[in-house]
Image 1 (cartoon, one colour):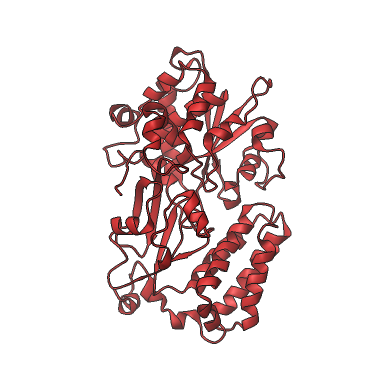
Image 2: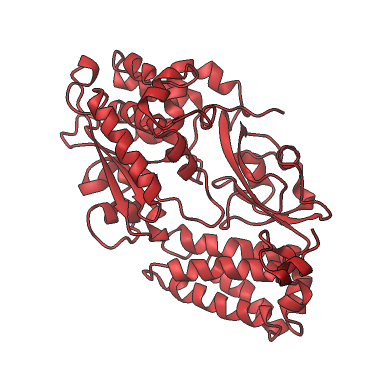
Length: 443
């Protein structure tokens, strides 16, 4: 299976982020798809995206066209499109490079999506820490306004759209769509009780669509090249292309745009394999909030159905790869510390549960755990899973339960031996900058 560069086709072009470059590159939609869209009825665009089978690229994989179709029409309320660019889960790094290299792809997709749901105001919610992305988006939005792609009477169609860039303050919980909406409204970002769902009562209690950056950026190409072209890639139930972010112990980490259904073995080969002299131990198919996979899962098809059938989630396709030098106890502890820190505290299972998960894992990492601690871990995860207010709690448990399932012996070793004695941190480091790390590394 080969790569299918569409979103990433011109990332390496000179000044690819400028309007001039976006319009010039023939493989890009170049706002040509927008011109065709504005001559069609909005319902036709919604149906086209439904027919394409495009699924959300933010983790859940919900059909994008179906989500657009939930927006009630003729209700007399304003409608909003919100793009969730609050990418912050450990290992997930696809949206930031796309916004840096091709922000106009996102903007054109937003204009098309807004037109389809009859919205006259759209928002991009981006993390404040990625200041370089903020500046690039601001400049791209300015260029789009100056060229008449945003604002009043877009391309003489009579359609108006304003686009606002909102800069978040760096809370992971604001990646949850309803917490993001609360933050946009000026409140503390905490998940809302559903129903009502955002499609009925979202931003400012009005019908709202919340989509991921990659989902919206795919729309101009679907419109411009057609449903058949899009469905010629991927699988029947998971059509299209996807950005796969490979990081960790691989020879060539980076972004690989490939059709859904590619196997991890194929992606690993494209990335040059595991670093020389080492072997695969475990990997994440969709970021740190998804159950771990091992070398036994090399031939799992990376689509929504096959990954789920093997007990994990495709998520954001953030494939973090670890070789045999890595302590799985240490890895899940670091992720769990992140989730405990980022819990909004609204619900008891997540607020208290993630705190105690960290305490138990720290004991096991230090070799001071007990057999009872292992059962406590599993029991805590069972009491959080499905009982937290939002998916953050569920995501915190996933790597732990799968790690215990596949590597229980390492947790048992945590009852008598510290992880750093069994797995020298210097051996697993990617950047052996110190003399000690260089001496300890086996690369």
